[in-house]
Length: 284
Image (cartoon, rainbow, N blue to C red; front, side, top):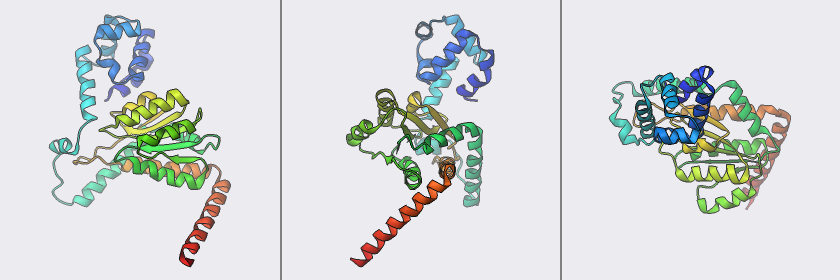
């Protein structure tokens, strides 16, 4: 069980000081827990014995064991396909059936990490026409952000896919207003440039950041209002994003249904312009 789940399960039993420690850990996860016990105690206005009792309540033998777990999580979040391949056994027979069975398991696990309440809350943000929506992903994950952007554009106005070139990001940051949504996708081997964009959007523009990531948590999570930690382990050299894609498709459908009459009209108008454009191209 990862640390976040342990904190959630034990939260009802925490003292006031332990709740303070839990909040500090989650606000700067996992880096807050990698400081010395004295430094962590000073920053949280607690004491070393309080921290020791806290980590023991979470099920660890002591602060050193607790830190080893955090370091392990950091390493997991940076593993490449080469490193993943060393830990897996290749599928020797019935590759397609076996692999599709694994992806089905991954998709099923999505319901274990995303509640209906969180799903509905995020869809409400994406459907709110008073908010503009900006979307961006990493080197590999950006097509997932683009998938959502392309469909949202047909459903509602003021949807912008942020280009991968950081040189043009100031234009989008200047366009953002308080409470606009910045939807970000970042899986392990995280991209620090995206974390910097998230920090500026949250602190300078007041944007609401929604993050799709994995259980090791992109550094963007420090600035996110909503975090969706997707299962991605496929048991092969390659992580699978099928769970994230299924979640995105569910969001598209749900957002479209929020005001179907408006969605229907916009798609009809969209298709009308699109058909006219195709005819013009054929005529020329």
